[in-house]
Image (cartoon, rainbow, N blue to C red; front, side, top):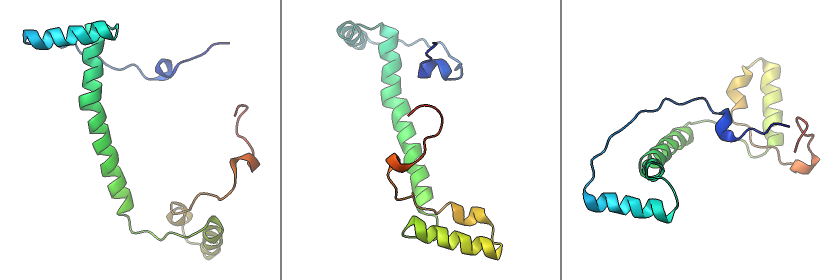
Length: 121
């Protein structure tokens, strides 16, 4: 049986080599962190970039996406049963289903009562 990690399934990313000149105290601080965490200096630098540059940018993009999503003026029904009745009525009238489909609330059933997809849980 072959196991793939999440990293193995990601598309190969283009890498770039960067040369950075640091003042001695900054270099020594990086070395101390690398030694304390038993990592290579380059790994500490990459993780720092991820933590202080990439993650905050991703968070900003998520906030902007959520703001845009919540600003959509769309009708929302209280329950899935209400949505289903509304959807069926509109479908019978020939209204485009995709216009009503996006506002459907989640079904109010336990995951224990649903059929599983695929072979694993």
